[in-house]
Length: 227
Length: 307
Image 1 (tube, rainbow over the protein chains, first blue to last red):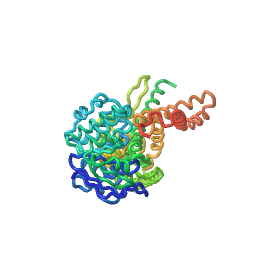
Image 2 (cartoon, each protein chain N blue to C red):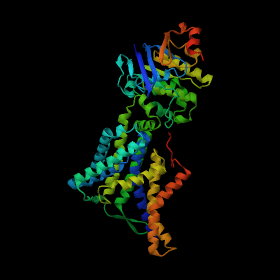
Image 3 (cartoon, rainbow over the protein chains, first blue to last red):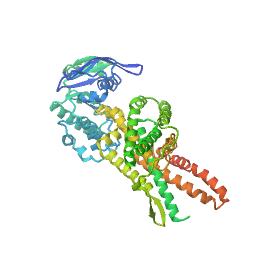
């Protein structure tokens, strides 16, 4: 098992955000992390990366317990984070964003540019001048350049035009087909479910349902994900 | 007033500016990357000056002293970062100011304890001794020209480091989003120590070079520190380019003000009074310039990308 999250609890200061989240992900699998707004999806991702270290429970990556490890060491265990809001470095060029934190492996600048030709066209431009879709491609490319074993995508298509969304999903499907393990958070079920092998649903900081996209009936969707 | 005299003062201003840049560059890097206000930066300047003077006296070579100043200041910087500063990043600026003020006292007393209260003297290396003839028939010390050249070289080196190397990319990335660069696998704690040591080394270099012009004594860093803060506020906190422009502006304004204002006033009032009023006005001049710049550009000439 590549990622094994067991009963983690996390806090922002005094207020508890996670009350016991279980999540697992096998090598080569794409798992969708679902739930309404404010149910703990982003906090779960922050906890996995030790950006908000869990106070209870355990996160194991490739069998290694991440407890007490600073975020950069967790990242080096093989997590490539594409965070909510993209968070490209606005004062760096596209090229610099890609190489600043790169680690050697099969993902090279050439391969990222092949996946997202737009990044190659804009390589000398400052990241702040990119469109939202281009920044999203850059955030994914930046994570791939660290040659992760697990790619984590948090709201990777949020606020993007439909055409651009399709480009991003196409890239995600391509990455999955190449065998990359992916943990993905997204609001658009119609686009998310075809990509996912399994789903985990969070409610009020707890994992409340796990299963395959096929098992996620309209009732369940209404119960846990409807507005 | 002759043209040669004005040129001499202009060069003095440039030399002061270059020295201020070495101080301000470290200060602005440390604030820009780590968000830390380091009052003890002047102490690292003093450490550089003392290391250079002591080693030069022991070995007879200014150059070995200069290398020693870089090493001593960088080592002192790294040590202070590991022991003290590291605990301050997550705290507010008041805690940082208090702790780094304490460091000033510790460094000053420590230096007094090691070297005594009497100033040390550092000789200008023979190869840079003497003067050159400037257009207009004025003799200008080679050593001061060398300081200007060294400062220009360091400015260029820093530019290459920040804009062309991976370390520079990471420093800039850290300026805009510390957490993200860590989440991508870059060890920010080590990055911070490296940046701090680099800033310290630049301050130490400034101290060593100025040590041959002034006496090397405890407390020599604080007046320079205040000017360096004026520089980074004018230039835009966090911006190296701003530090360079701000330093040259402050250096030239201060020097030319002290030179020109009394002469200007002498046209209207008796010379004795003109000297006094002019001198007083000149020491206010850089603060007036700072106020004017901040009135127009509240975040300085080159505001940093973030915030």
